[in-house]
Amino acid sequence: MKSELIVALDVPSANQVERVIDQLPDEVRWYKVGLELFTAAGPTVIDLLRGRNKRVFLDLKLHDIPNTVASAVRAAAGHGVDLLTVHAAGGRAMLEAAADAARNTAGTAPRLIAVTTLTSLSQDDLQAIGIGRQIELQAEALGRLALDAGIDGLVCSVQEVERLRTAFGPDPVLVTPGIRLAGEHKGDQKRVATPEEAVRRGSNYLVMGRSLLNAADPHTTAQRVLRAMREGCGAA
Ligand code: C5P
Image 1 (cartoon, protein in one colour):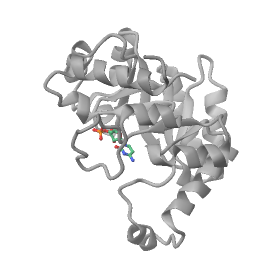
Image 2 (cartoon, rainbow, N blue to C red):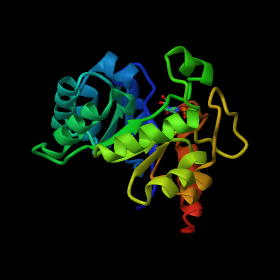
Image 3 (cartoon, rainbow, N blue to C red):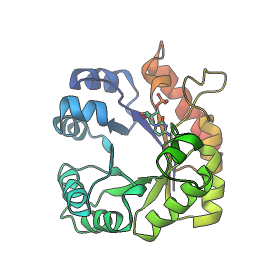
Image 4 (tube, helix red, strand yellow):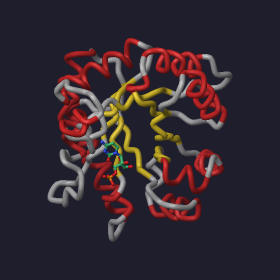
């Protein structure tokens, strides 16, 4: 599978979404709508993206009782969302209900991606919510649970891609944030990788936000990223 760039629309309004799309090359096909934008602008932002022929990654990290999550998955599918996140910590029944709802939609089924352990959590944070297991083991156990329940893929760092491929094989869709161009500041991301490295290691979707949105010239920066991705797969 070819790796794709997903631009994280971490902006507060639909107007700004239009501006971001206008600034970036047409080749950028995928956009991520997160909690901030979805809460501010609602599903019309998905319609806006679809209207501009873009693919949508709805990153709401769903985590609720199975029936509620299944209904939300159906609603997202109805809007034409292509990728959707759920929390693996919601448990097997929730994950299975989500996977079932995605499979049984009338249109194209959205692919579901599980979040295992938020990178903002430390070992102490896990301890405080009653999880004594080491962070990496916790992430792997939740990854296994999600994939066994029929979830299509996982969010992970580029550094984890090879380990997850060894554990789970070639099928899971691996989505990696924390991408930075060579020489760029890490910001608050703890583990970063370049686009070349992400593609080389086998990430399917590279999520990039601030590096593109805050660039002096987003168009040229995005072209650099796309070129770096082609180099990573040996195609440039
Ligand atoms: O601006 P930046 O490129 O760091 O944005 C990355 C995007 O990926 C943001 O929307 C952020 O919420 C998301 N993300 C992340 N780190 C994770 C999981 C998700 O940065 N571990």
